[in-house]
Amino acid sequence: MSIRKRLEEIEEKTLSPFASKSAQSFGRTLYGDEPDEFRTVFQRDRDRILYSKAFKDLQYKTQVFLISEGDFYRTRLTHTLEVAQHARTLARALRLNEDLCEAIAYGHDLGHTPFGHTGETTLNEIMAHDGGFEHNLQSLRIVDVLEKRYEAYDGLNLSFETREGLARHVTVYDRPKVTPEFRKFPSPTLEAQIVCMADPLAYCAHDLEDALNAGYLSIDDVSRLENPLIMRVLEKCREKYGGFNHYETIIRSRLLVRTLIEETNIMVIEQTQTNVGKLKELTPEAVRKQKRPLVAAPQKDWEDFKRLKGFLFENVYQRPQVCIMNEKGKLILSRLFAHLEKNPEMLPRTLKNRFNQSGKRKTRRRIIADYISGMTDRYAMDLYQMMFEPYEKIMFGFRE
Image 1 (tube, rainbow, N blue to C red):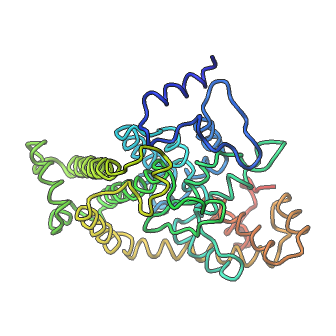
Image 2 (cartoon, rainbow, N blue to C red):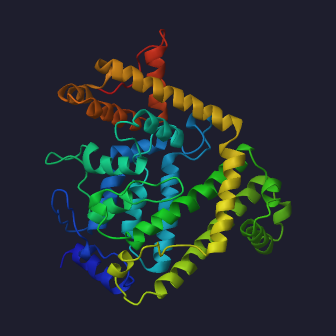
């Protein structure tokens, strides 16, 4: 028996009846299955994403604060790793497939632009009459088409379940239009739903910690919130850590965020167990038939959590410093796109060949959008300097 077969047997014996089993995957629907002796289909998906260029580049892409403004802020990569950690915690508690959760989590932000959501909004405005731009669908485009790692085909040839998790990643910021391929079921897998939940849990906690570290917020600001969730978290901090009120600020901040993470994970696990327990049919198919997500938090707690996100939006994301950084990103991407469209000879050689071979304006603009969305913050800023500053030397690794 191969190691893969043994791992599949372990899944069958230990995972929940609702879990996505590797042996029951719909498979690699783009270019056919490629069985592995040692890894399950979802483990292989995870590894293919992990070794992709797009994943590596996340380390130099903005989460909220431009990475050039300080080296202690989260990046898109650290956010992705934290989403994966949340997802694994939830999946393990609910006996779901951790490998599938991890694969979806690693891939969920591959399509993000430089400069965070401002970059996405900017490209969407530029591409408004040519299909728009949405980072979840761009993530799917990356793993299906844009990554070049194999001679036989473009993309990574991932399983249906992983691709579905990317295409149907729904949060406050994420509302992708579901493509026909993924409309056959009312709901995706529980694992995909877990990543949808892990995303806001992760960014709310780490954005709060970054804001506290940057001095945008203080513990006192958070303590004054009339928010039952925060009040409960602070009370647990005081109960668990006797000297909490007297600890230095950095320790109090980290204990606050740690306890918030624990509290939100627990409320999601317990509510999801309740929701799943109401199903009459104990199968993954029963999950897919549901019109509403089964992975959820209690309604009152979720409303309190959304109020906390609203507080962060007003007091962190809308601060003048952040708005100025966002405007920088918008200016850079807008000017780069316009200049490259007017002067396509400045595109890297491989893209220039594709650009010249296509006679359609829409396709040509999509090629430029692919190029710009794949840039890191640093590359975009360097390219901007090189294009628009006459005395800037062309010294950095320009893509050929």
